[in-house]
Amino acid sequence: MSSLASSETIVGFEALTVSKRLVRSVSQKLRKKAHRVEGDEEDKVRRVSLRCLTLYGRGGGCKVGADTGEEFGDPSCRRRSSTCEEGKLYKSICGIEDNNFNCFSYGMKEKFWKKSNRKDLDLEESVRNSRMHIFLPDDILEMCLVRLPLTGLMSARLVCKKWRHLTTTPRFLQMRREGSYQKPWLFLFGAVKDGYCSGEIHALDVSQDQWHRIGSDILRGRFMFSVASMQDDVYIVGGCSSLTNFGRVDKSSFKTHKGVLVFSPLTKSWRKASSMRYARSMPILAVSEVCSDFSIIQSHQNRHDRQFPRSRVGGVSAVYEDPHRLSLRRQYRNAFDVSEPSSLPNRKAYKFIRQRSGQANTKGCKRFVLIAVGGLGSWDEPLNSGEIYDSVSNKWTEIQSLPIDFGVICAGVVCNGMFYVCSEKDKLAGYDIERGFWIGIQTSTFPPHVHEYYPKLVACNGRLFLLSVSWCEGDGQIGRRNKAVRKLWELDLMYLTWTEVSVHPDAPMDWNPVFIANRNLIFGVEMFKIFGQVLDFFTVCDVSNMEMSWSHISRNHMAHEFDASSCMTKIMAVLHL
Image 1 (cartoon, rainbow, N blue to C red):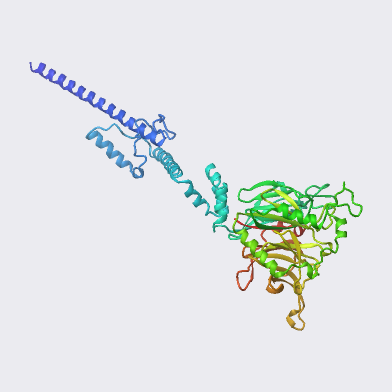
Image 2: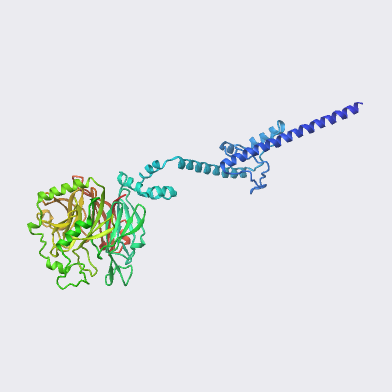
């Protein structure tokens, strides 16, 4: 009986043990299932699935029953030692059983943690960026992007299509133009390398003193053109190209262009504008701002028809229109004489008219016109004719020509609505843009200069300046050699007298320097070859300063790659971008 009782007790104990084990296994399976469901939901949120684990790792560590919970996302778990894992194992054996053990080797666990943590960080950053992109309004984006410098703005356009679209809209460009976030940029054209016109544009960020190179295949092979800046664009007008040796600076057989190209540095885009009536190389360009109701065709065409009627004079046929009107110039040779006082209008009446026109300009919306005068024609002959371009109608209109005895035009600039030009004969004339005729200007003694160096005209904030090269007599010291210096003169527009205001610090080694003004600054570039190397000097003068001293902004940074012919073909434009 005792043996039977003991056997029944053992059977009951075994049955109880089996039932407990069964319950424990079922509960563990349910717990694993619930844990797996939670892991799937977490993976869906993070878009990363950690359930697809292979049986064996690269290092041979077993991944069966691997813990795929939040332990790998917690950096503190990375520092757990093997003794801690062993204590956990011992604890599960001696106490409550835990089947959620980790049998990774130490190296495999480290690699798996790095991979998982890197994915988590990348996802968190992408989610954070997407949320910022979604909830940041376009107005705030524009306010942030409009304050970037030009180089930063170009980099920001590469982020996404939306940023590129925002930074190229007319509204954004207008905000940037009207704001105070623009910095001066110098654009140098006409570089010649190894005898070829490369067409490259070299841009200098004056505030950062950094040079940037811009490729332009559309300018390859063209030389002796002129440039002018209008708002945020650069206009390339006229020029020449060789017919026999394309790309080379060769005038033995060449073609003179009348086409006009427009380059936009903000968008790095090119477009074509309307061509001039006549082909020109190296024309004198100037840009002026006019009111919106200004009619170019009416004012200039009427003036032209009255001074130069279209008739057959001097045996000129109707087939050959005589585009430069050489026969008409002979007839009206004495019609315009800058030395005659009668050619000058009454000073008081003229001043009153200028004041009225200035008040009218402030009422309406402004637009810009481009004037091209002089230059060389298709047969390399000097031209006295001129044309004016309206940016709104995209048309060129011929204007009144200068008289033949005025001489070859060497410089020109717009100041207070008047287009001033000077000739190699030291004569000065002004073209009234709104009224459409030339005015001879009699000044005091023209500033003395060496005739091999043509004078240069610049204008800053309603002030007219002239740069000329003259000899310095050694300051009266015995035995001191004379030297040539470049001086800056200012014309008093009321009394028409010249006054010396500054002296350029560099010796005038360049026969064809370029000086251009923008706002209160006068920029200059000189380039010459000495000792087998081409050197370049960029200077600036602030006319708002009482001292009006010159300073260097760049020296010998890019001209060492150029040929000596670049000294004659170079041309420069300045923009605030």
